[in-house]
Image (tube, rainbow, N blue to C red; front, top):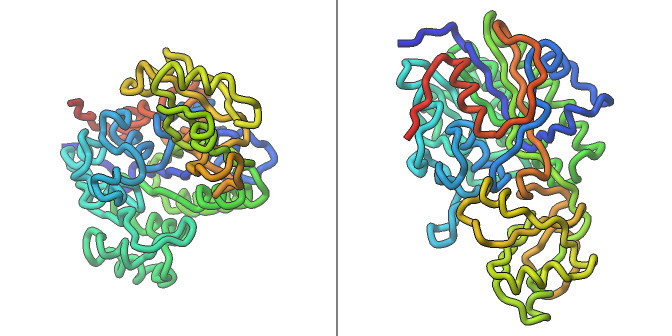
Length: 379
């Protein structure tokens, strides 16, 4: 049985933290600058398909693509009720949390997707009945907490934890509390993603949230016990959305069938539809056609189909009433994985300074397993 010091590992996922934020020298992020200088970090992490939160976070813990682990989007298909993938019972692959539990480690998760009923000692799962931006209603989360008294225990130490909405500040309070109790803590911070959706990525508002996130991470690092290691990850990058192009409108206008809109890309099922997409004018926002080799690499089930990215600033909308519309959100993700990069950085005892090449999001699970000295189960 593996025995580690308390909180040997702290893993913080900052939702929507595009690598370009860390590459921006003007941002005031001293804690992350220290991690990048003293630890190892990748020049960028290539995501999975789809590049959205719940599948990507599950890949971080399983090392497998969405096609393998079974979390295909944030929400389940309509024929399955359309609710979120709340529970680990929906997973098709074992996770790092399973490996840690088998090794006898006490782990903690804080608003990490797909962790209701996870095999952890301490759990504040991502579960909500109400949302307000990146905040989730605290009572819903506490209703699924493990142990059942966990929220009361945290509030006894940090009374302000009891606010109605769990945001990144209260997630940080929970992290500081659990760092003294668990061998590994996995926390999912959400406020940056929400801000980038509302006001766009790389804006004054988004930069402010990145800098605030750095302050919160500084508080976590201050609570990290001696000998602990810290890993920063993120799930996907972000793109600005200047206009929404409703290709369904154009397809109905031109009597074209066999296209599927995915927001960050469009799929053509047959050569005729693909040829139609290729000849559309610039007004329609068609960008790069994805090479067949990339489709086979990132989306084997879509092999044989034709996929097109949007032009910069374009989002493919679902409407069929007008061609050009105002985007529902001014920032978005869900684009093809090579469109942007997420992040990876590790810091602490035994981790030497290094600048790593790009690697795939699925490689993070084995890196975390190595830091915890546990073996990922492959099946």
